Image 1 (cartoon, one colour):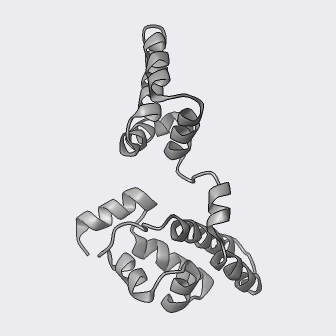
Image 2: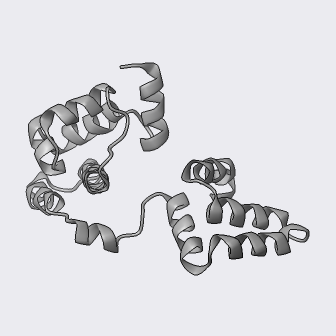
Length: 166
């Protein structure tokens, strides 16, 4: 595992995937093979994610299942009975692309980008930002960043203002 890969995983997932998957395995009493099955990926792919050979969960459906597994592990650590885990694992395993399409993204920057881009074109967002710039420069910047910039720039902006969201 390179430190750079672990750092990138921590930036994406809040901690290296070895830690996140370790928590899931411990709380849910899963083998790595069973966890891979629930996620819908091969055991070698899961191993590469855990070891840091791969940085990111590329499949959005697998990423959603991962977040659901993580939430379930948190529920168990807060007292959910292990007897309730197996039916939930089956539900997670059977999350489909139809479910994924109905769910808002878990990343707030992506959600804001999708909302702005759904209601206005890039040109309209730039025009609105230009109109607001003199009287409300921070709002104008937010419209430009979330409306027309790339995802990484939006995530950086969100991270820079996270202290204001608490």
